[in-house]
Length: 416
Image (cartoon, rainbow, N blue to C red; front, top):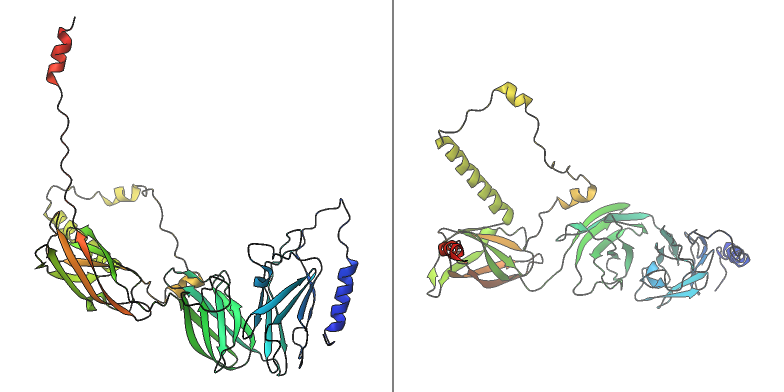
């Protein structure tokens, strides 16, 4: 490794680490997490032709297994690179290098993630980023934002962010924190394709079945964006099953969430009675929330009409009695969630995989109906047709109470 500006302080750190042999036997337990003594190249350095590894020197021996269920390499994030990254363990030092070697004219970011542990299982909590250049001046543009799981309605915790400076395919990488936030500093200005990925196998790329979202961002000095990840399925949602809700409605369940921007009334619905295929008139399709709202309004109107026709109801108590009556005990409604994540999630409707089908007539007990829905669209825009059979259960037969044996008492009375 060619010596650079960071070599001298790094050598001093090495010497300090070698001189520190640990706590004497019988002393108090060491509960201090690992501390980074030095790095090479130093953050902010310009190294036109680096030939060795990037080195992170700690104040003690690091657990080679990474201190947990994941390996040590998962604690380091180097970008931009065209392929895998070599991470090697050297007791109290970790060496990092891209497999294709350091390329001239790039600004590299090496993120040291929380979770690195020493042999006593003391875990480093903080995150540290080292930025160095192999030619150009280090830029100072910043890209940040929020990444959420749209269908699940939660933050994309631990998700991968890939920011590709177009037309290049190489990407700057970041991970989503526990609040859904991410940030990339020291980026070159330009136009970026930004991806948020549910990186389930932790390979730092987007695989075919992983949920993701992408957006184009023009970055000058700073930019903020929101990414809504979901599974991009090329097959549209099909009707999976139909279940009765009440005497005039059925709940339709689809194989995947539907596009909230597609009005339910725009779908083509056909229902016929089995086995003779008699057409059944349909009043409409509704989201579950819309149907519940309509049903509640109908019940309220019916209750109001009944109350108006009821001449036996008691007059309301006098005002002073109302004031004296204590408030009814019961659970109080929860306080509204005003957190930043909830405010972000409220910007879009929640995708649902269910609709409610309303009929014009009462469904016959014990009957079976063929239900077909055409043109349903998923979040990716793929369309599909599907069908299911709706079965209306027969009412349970009334239970007949067991008749008392009237002759038993006579028989018992005649026994000697």
